[in-house]
Each structure stands twice: as structure tokens, then as C-alpha cells.
Length: 422
Ligand code: ASP
Ligand code: MG
Image (cartoon, rainbow, N blue to C red; front, side):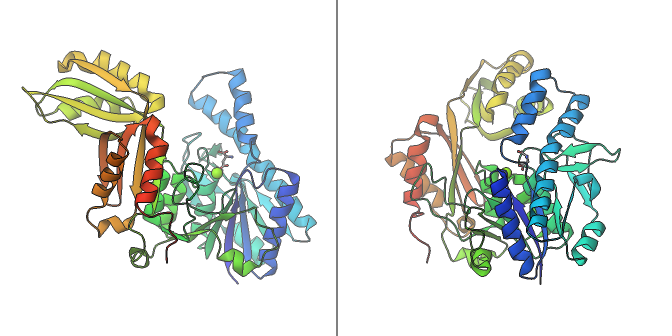
């Protein structure tokens, strides 16, 4: 008998029929002797629907008071789906109770719409489990010190589930979703993409931050910090498949690096179109320049990703970096008004039609020539690399957005990711 946390995404909770299937699946696990805690998302589309209503009333208002109400509003989506799931479980003959975040309580800070979990009190939940109940806990929400309802940011119920699993020292946290695991890359771009049986936590962290949207990145950080065994699997298998088979399906996020080292050097290709490139040209090459430019950007709360500075010529250099595409206009404006005049730089230019493509794998630590293989493969396709950034386990390039799919396909092939791992 083990304590298991199941998390079901919005698609899996999308209709009464699907909720009934979730209940049947959870009941199967409970009847196999496990203590079950279930964390559902809102029914698919519900969070968007609620937030759109708020927007209709106050288009682009953003203040703490407004954000507080957004959380009050959006949290109702999970409250409804949780109650419906408890009702469905009762209809399956299981004793079940649902709790909103404040009832557990899941305590968070007061950063409305992007709150962070601070603590979870599991006494009430444990008592219910001991009494043989299946406990349903709302995803995505918590409560702050002043008893305000808070939410954890879009996709936040992944984080709720992992946090509950960590607090309760669950044997495993199973994330049921509309894909059947983590893939070598997006199968919509590369049909030969393969599901990974295991992926290391560090690789998953890179992939989540690089744009693979299977898990909310904060949930992966949480899993790493508290070593929560995490599995991503499909909620669209028949609910009555053999439980042992189901327990081994999907992708397991592991902490066993050595095992992984023997396998592929590169585990996956991630990509995103979310960034834009900004270049400051003709910058005087002297100490303090990077700070002068990026300090101003950071002060405006704009996140910077890839950065490069060219070698200087005649005492001048060019400085480029990427920001989120939604921040592009604000960044250019800021540089033109606040930075150029005091810096004596020539001009600011930019490009929003870029994308970032990355190879990820912990095997890169122990193998040389991985990045050069990436560059060769891109050059064979005639793709120009505009920027490069690396970490221990990934190499990213910024290229013209129109070559994104070509690049991803070429790299997937070059690193043999379409071949089954032995
Ligand atoms: N319902 C919330 C959202 O759509 C949280 C979640 O589904 O994880 O962002
Ligand atoms: Mg989600």
C-alpha cells in the first residue's frame, strides 16, 4: 500500500463523461490498496472563459486589487471540477471528499496570479486517508496570510500536485495529461519523435524552460528540490487497463543520472518562438557597458535570455540579447529613451522573427563534439546561426524563425533521436 498523488489536466476533466472515467481510474487505484490524493485542473477552457469575462469588464487593468479578484474568480474553476470529481467518486462507491486550497490549507505568499506555495498542512488530508477516503484537492490555488484566495500561475495545478506529493512524502506523483509522455521533440513537427521512457530531472527542467509545455516549469523545480518521483502519462488509455502496466507507462522523471549516461547523448530537441532579438550597435567598448544596458532592462523587470557581445573594432562593439516577444516594443523604447543617450551608442535594431532551437542531454557533460555536430547539421541545411548559448547540458541557437521546423527535423535526425534506445 502506498500513498499516491494523481493529477488530471483540464482536457482529462473536460466533460462529465471524462470526469467519470477519471473517477473509475482513481477508484481502481484505491481498490488496489493505495491511499489516493487527486489534484484536478479546471475543466478545459474554464480558466480562459473566466478570465475573459474579467477582461470584458476591465480590459487591461493590472493592480493588486484587480489581481486579487482575478484569483478569486479563476480559483472557482478548480473548485467546481474538484467537487464534481468527488461526486463522481462517490457514485463509483468510493468515500470521497474535496477541499479547496484554503481548506487544506495550502499556504502561499500574496503574489496574486503568480503566488508561491509556502507550506501545506496535511493533517486533515491524512485523517481522511486513514478513514479510507479518496481526497480531492483543488489544483492551482492556495490561501495567503490574510485569508485571500491566491492562484499559482497558468498551468499551476502541476505544481499543486507535486507540492502535495512532496509535503505528504507520496511514493509517486502521476501527472495524467492529454499526451502519453515526454517526447524527444514535438511530434507535430517531427512525426518520428519518440516517447522517452525516462528523462532526468535536469533535462526536464531545461526542456520545460526551453518551451516544451508538458509540465509547468515550477512543478519540475519543486520535484527536483524535494526529489518527488514524477511520471507523465496519458489519461486517454482505457481506465480499466492493468494497473501494473499503467504504473509503468508514460515517462518517468528520474534522479538516476548514471543509468541515463549510458543512453543517448542528446535526449531531446526543444524550440520556441517566444523571443525577439534586440541589438545595440556601435557601443563604446569599455567597462560597465553590459551593466549599463542590461541593468536598465532588469530594472524595468524585463527578463533577458541569450546574450552576445561582438569583438570590438575601433573601440566600438555590438551588443545583442533576446527578450520575450511581448516585451520587445517596451525594450526598444527603453533603450532608445533611457540608454542610448547616456551611452553614446549609435542605434538599436531588432528582429522579432527569430526562434530558439536547443539540444538537451545530460550526456553532453561527458561527450565532446556535441555542439559542433549541431552546428554542422545546421550548416548542411544552409541555416544561419545568429546567436549561441550553452549550459552544461544544453546548446541553444537563435535562428530565423522560418527555418525552425527544418532545423528541428535535421537535429532530430542528426542525433539519432528517431532510433529506439536499446
Ligand atoms: N486551470 C489553470 C490553468 O488553466 C491551472 C491548470 O490547469 O494547471 O492555467
Ligand atoms: Mg496543464
